Image 1: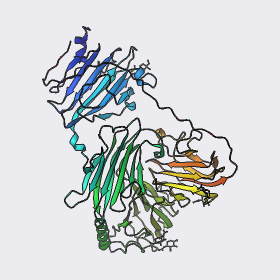
Image 2 (image 1 turned 90 degrees about the horizontal axis):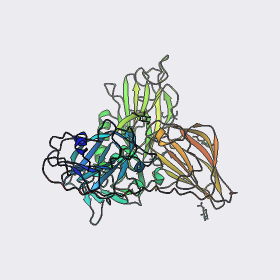
Image 3 (image 1 turned 90 degrees about the vertical axis):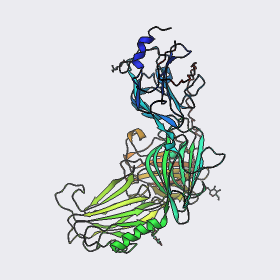
Image 4 (image 1 turned 45 degrees about the horizontal axis):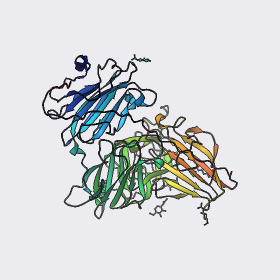
Length: 626
Ligand SMILES: *[C@@H]1O[C@H](CO)[C@@H](O)[C@H](O)[C@H]1NC(C)=O
Ligand SMILES: *[C@@H]1O[C@H](CO)[C@@H](O)[C@H](O)[C@H]1NC(C)=O
Ligand SMILES: *[C@@H]1O[C@H](CO)[C@@H](O)[C@H](O)[C@H]1NC(C)=O
Ligand SMILES: *[C@@H]1O[C@H](CO)[C@@H](O)[C@H](O)[C@H]1NC(C)=O
Ligand SMILES: *[C@@H]1O[C@H](CO)[C@@H](O)[C@H](O)[C@H]1NC(C)=O
């Protein structure tokens, strides 16, 4: 046996005052164990690879870091530094850390499935990981190759898992189907989580969350954090997905589809029922989601409107501009889609000149999948000459939407150029009119608003299975045009729209883009934070066509056969004005067939090894098993 173990140990032993540590040697030669238990301490403590921060030595066959918590706890591991030698793309060929997070105890053997394998740098791994149960094991392995990689360090703590309890009633004989019923006895607020949250959700799960409000109530849900399967593909082809239906089952209209990542995403039901479905079929599950819900009285929201309305003496819906209160500073209005689906907003005293030193806020509140679109008809604000081009220090109108839980300015208008239409990215939009100077020649603005389900897209037939999808059928029209949401205005953020072209047999579709401005850089991937337009002869991605983004001159694109898909996707940053294109269904189809290549799934090479299950004793001591 290796005599030098005694000398090595102090390097990876941590100075943990109360945390229980066992250093052991498993059956397999060279297998060392470090055990961190919460038996005596819940304090945060550190762990590190051997010799950190100097490079670790080669041939560490297996070193186990076993974390064991109390029965009502889970383990949170935070990596502060990570630098483990990576051989090409496969971690198992180089040095690696195998991660076991779904364990009932710290005992693992060669048959225990690991969740993932980490290698590379900090950017290659999630910085925080959680166990789903009372144990978590990291297995560190270094191969024969001498490298100058320094290994890893981090800290861990034990957290109470009851914090992540899903309120609501788990339906009998189901894994994760919950029902939430509003009742006078129970709280109108609560939380719900994906299975095993904050650890990763199990593969092949399907969960449902059904909300039933009482009469004159609706349901508000905010997804505080969503982290599903990674990868840069549209929600159309995701194996892990959250679908939100505006009613009691999957047969109701889809309000929103969530895949990949997001923060503080808000959904409001139209009626008193809401159904959420979470499906996970990918091989690389993410962390999942955490969300809060609220049963909200419809009267409550209307009362707020009415109090505003009474206090400020507005006519509602406003057909004249908001009157300015005595202090000449407040003229705020809330426009709720329950009250009116469309109407007019104006600057105070329009079309007479607006007063100076006035701020008016116009807050729009929609529901279901409604978006707010504001279309301007007249715009005439006083503009100080010799100022910089932007609207700073000018009389202006600013548009804000909710992004990541903040109100973020998406546009700013000043002078007398008629603004393009504005659209919200969700149920809410705020416009803020700010007059600093005013002038007797400046009329202000006049605009119409509409709460719309169709994203401002009026061609084609909207399909209910997705929030924003349109079918263009050759039987309905052989020619026509289609455009991006809110065109010719800036497209909304975090929006995915599909255009499905259905021709008759022997037809194909020809598209001509006459305008194209989609924010991004080639190859239009998520890594460059690009929005994009994707083309495909199938529902899955089609390698034949590259994604399009940027500001492009006119171009043409043609399908191979009768079906064609165009997908537009925007992220939560920077916008463009989108695209406008014409389509023609043509008759002569090339009769060759392209069979799409199915990507083979990457299998992991299973290495087998033998590890001794570790049994914890309850003493506070350090043991070295010879
Ligand atoms: C580690 O080695 C690689 C190549 O062997 C070298 O490029 C890199 O700069 C080295 N890093 C450090 C921190 O010495
Ligand atoms: C506005 O609403 C009225 C009824 O409330 C409807 O008749 C009209 O068509 C709507 N206008 C638009 C532009 O949708
Ligand atoms: C708003 O402007 C349009 C276009 O200038 C005009 O037709 C309409 O009458 C205006 N609305 C009001 C209420 O003045
Ligand atoms: C067009 O109409 C015909 C006859 O009703 C039908 O068979 C065909 O499926 C329709 N084509 C499409 C693309 O819907
Ligand atoms: C989009 O293109 C079509 C066809 O060229 C055209 O009729 C339509 O006016 C365009 N839409 C806008 C808003 O420019």
